[in-house]
Image 1 (spheres, rainbow, N blue to C red):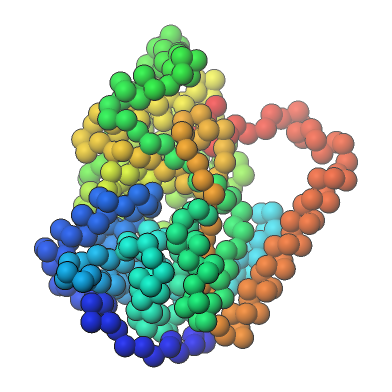
Image 2 (cartoon, one colour):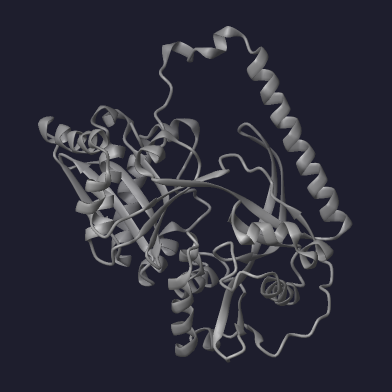
Length: 410
């Protein structure tokens, strides 16, 4: 049961907008884009007007309630625009590949994980109060991926306004911790020039290998709503032949209407996907979202039978060329959570980040937080003991099999 938020009056310059007509006000949208252009947040793709509309629409499922927290500074100009939606988050009690229990929590999700606002404690406290009032029926506020070195993360740890109302919990989620990214120069030629000689030669050699094997590589871009069905057909066929499929990982789980979701993204200019063909045969795929000059890589995979041809590496390299020299070039790319060799091959930056939950101060939330934290500590300790005392035979792949290649690379 959600705790009633602290009753506070909104300041004269602070508004909580809940009407689609207000969201679309041309002057507000123009100022919103100006604030985004000045922001260094890697996740500002998800703070954009287009993504906010997409998140509220929630294609293929029930639409979500959304709000914009808008603040005007002393001169009357808008200096903060914070999009939030009500959805469900949760805490999973998972050990290895086994999920023992899932707890769902109704949550106010801050899109982009940070506030698009001046980075000072009083501004953030004021915005938190507005979200708290709007989301009085929610058990928590979710910040999906907050960089450890960000003002947002420091504020959650030090603000009295946060401590008085919420338990701050950054659960360890398997596969999270480090985010890899690439900052791009203006052109693909400039990107190539920025690479060290060995890496540049390695990429071009892998492209030439496809030609020498009689399987010339061709990159296909998909970015229109009419493209989605064909992309999903090709990508799912590739995913079924990937090494991830062998361990039960599906990049397009059946409980999501991907046709509706990706088609809606395409209508809003957010959808970007690629297929690498090798000699006319689909070999690898990549899909993500693009807005505000940033491409977020959501999923990728390649046909494991073609691993000798390095389709994952060739796909990503050619994608860079299209992202930089194609329509609406980007300036940055996020590879998301997870530390894998192919990300280190392509990325020139990384940072630690975490999902942060602001759990309302209720007995139920306190018990859930303590239980989950204790469970994760037990799992970590058990893994530590296993690695220390496991039998020598466990160090070798069973049946002489080689370990799977890294995610989307070769």
